[in-house]
Amino acid sequence: MTGAAIDQCFSLVHSQTQGRPEAEKMIQRAITISRQTGCGALEVSEGVARLMNHHLPPIVAPWTVFDRNLMDKVLEDHQLPLSLARYLPEDRISELEDLITDVFGIIPTSQTAARQTAETILRLVEIGGVVVIGRGANIITAKLPRVLHVRLVAPLGDRIARISAMDHKSLTDARRFCDEEDLARARYLKKHFDANIDDPHLYHMVLNTSRLGYEETARLIADAAQNLN
Image (cartoon, rainbow, N blue to C red; front, side, top):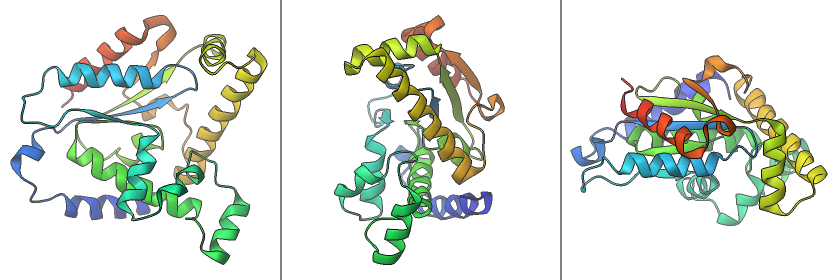
């Protein structure tokens, strides 16, 4: 997805979110999380949401984490069958699937899926009160104010051990999984946004969850989000 395409999505979503009730505009902050596989991004994000919710007035909707459930939201927004969710993880739509889609119209192409995902992410972040994990959300929302962009990292050995314990994989399989997932996410950003996922300039903060722990990482992110202008 080019910069012009992102701008077009931004204009569309911005026009659709004007004129909302004031209660919906009270939360103006959002957070994007980019992560290495196995560094605890979901646990950290859920911790951030809990901390942010602690300060909210009762009339405001609670902070929500969008990770795998993001694709269900994309399919809902674009009136597509939920059964397509299995085709839409990061960088899992092959060129062959794109070709089949173009010919038979079975599933969205990777470019279409990326555009639809960008539209949904922009809509969610403009409303605010969300933590969006992955999908190039930091690049998609780079022009929006009061959005904190965070990259979570951890040593490979720690990530392998965590994936091995959580998913009951051998250390060899866990390493392969980490390598494949990280490569897929890097390809997704390169293909659709021409960006390097490891470029620190794309983020406000790069945090090592092994050194900090999940709770402290969540606290640092929540503090930074609350103080972001």
